Length: 551
Image (cartoon, rainbow, N blue to C red):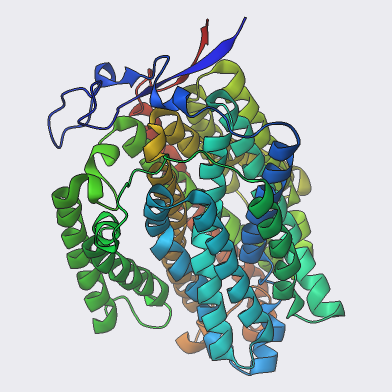
């Protein structure tokens, strides 16, 4: 008996099957329609199978691995990089420059994948990432290294979502969750390997090989995709052949308001409470500019409609907007937890950076396992909604349990709670992309995927910055109250491993308690984010699901 995938969706307005909806109002579940036999989805059947599919998917996994590895491999290399360049004050930009360009251009790549040949766009993204990696590896100065990180971030912004989009056009809809789950597993594996590989290169060869390693692997990806990847023609939304038409479809007004808005917001969050106080005029101006530019961007999107960077008809869909909210909150909670967990091991348990990475393995391994299992589960059940609820519940319980950590917490608790957290986050982190791809018509999948990957990066960026402010304020007030006469400037220099060099010996036990309390305060924020993410699950209509239909 032959099986086909029937998917609920809201089609493009103006097509014969498009429902009449009130502009600016979220469609109700009843307004969702199905792709029946002969629809656009079925006219674009899976284009890859057999060895070609294996080859293409394998190198897509390599591409995802490179991007994810680049996020973590630098952590253990930074001390050597700052030693060589003698630029300790630039450390913050090593991560921020990469993050800025990644976050800025994710929605732009969503438009590129929708209006230009996907294969060409993906290969260009990899080449840009490779150029950035080469610049980082060969950088003669700290400034050159920062430029390289920014270029690499630009390329990375198109790679992960590009892999998701290519899979969406290359395999049957019911099988997409399995492949997306594998991508999630690859991301988790790279998070495990990154710090260890970075430490090995830095100690035994050179920190520059943390970036040179991307070049041969990226070259293999480009060659195999160029030879084997074949996507059907005519899937792009745009049919314009003139430069003027391309420019109009790319929403230049949206870009020139969105990109600086993101820069202003991220700079304010990066600098606030660290480089400058939150009340500093620079931070206030950045927030104001960001708000004004975002308001202008929203108005432009409403005006542009289908030519917008984020078409209103897509973001108004309940099966897109609520998974987007879920992704922002879940990613914010996860990155807050994972950012401070290694610090807890180093500051409270006295672990080295490499040891703390090993002690985080229960979290990463459980994420890998449950990301893969969830992909298979969604495919088997034909319904992703129960997994949204399970991810919220497991993540909230796990984060809540981790707020009970003390300086005497033993192995059984910090291992068990990590496994529980990894199961929840691993289950949930791919679901918004699966949901968006399930309900959107083929032409809108690139934009929908871009929205979800942007929400993931954006949520992590915002809430890690907020949690940093919570942590820093709690630590500063606690230490100032504990140690009489200590200078506030010294408190600002307290790191995860130098407590004993800053705090007098008689106050060390109390200082560890204060440090633990400050870390737990950040985890309270994560617990709240995980809990509130249930709103994203509740808003998804039950009919927005992948259904099994017998023919």
